[in-house]
Length: 305
Image 1 (tube, rainbow, N blue to C red):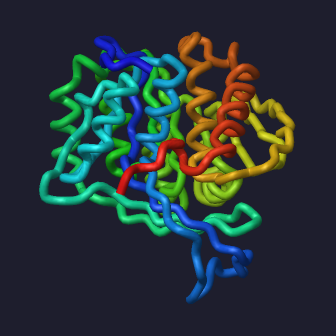
Image 2 (image 1 turned 135 degrees about the vertical axis):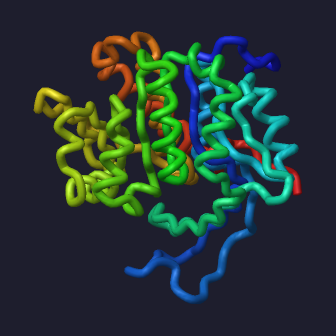
């Protein structure tokens, strides 16, 4: 890690910053989750949120990273950590009248997770575009935009802005937990600007039900836990990659973000012909995901109370 933010970031990451409060329970979840009453372990607090997690991993992989996110009045610890990683924070919009997002995460003995998420500060789409315009010169230097889960209008607006200002940039869209909140119109509106798509099996099923045409023109990577990873190519071909069993799993929190960061680290090797590095991208993604599974939290250091 470096203490100096890069002048010319290679990748811009859009996504949330959040403080994760993580606990485990001793009994498996039922069909509807943890139920109305359950006893939990002592809670630990970590830095989280997809934007923060991806930035952490990409900086750790020596990729100069510009973070596009929204934070609140309690972001001092998070900003200090991000700067120590070497992240460029000029794309961070701060709302001093609200607190940062918070995720409350319960994990059962089988690795199933239940997450309650408070999204933190809200930004109007027009205000967000003005924010992007204020850092436009930074975005024109980026070779890749990684659009992680964020409110749909802001995802669409950011990808559209990038397409206008820097049309040669590769756009990787990982809509995550917002996927099943989007109808066909919004899914198509966002995917218009994306070149690659990274989703899990649940998210892929929703897209197939609402807007299956999206898969016809994108390179799509679909993860499904321990099942093989699928890569759907724009020419109709499908590649499968077996997932090696990993034990013991300490905590699955953030492993999907780790996988995506690993993938993107390889696509950055050639953003004009990224398929050249598809195999290397899957290998890097699974390796980083396994590393994430081996410690508590998406980012391993506990925060001091």
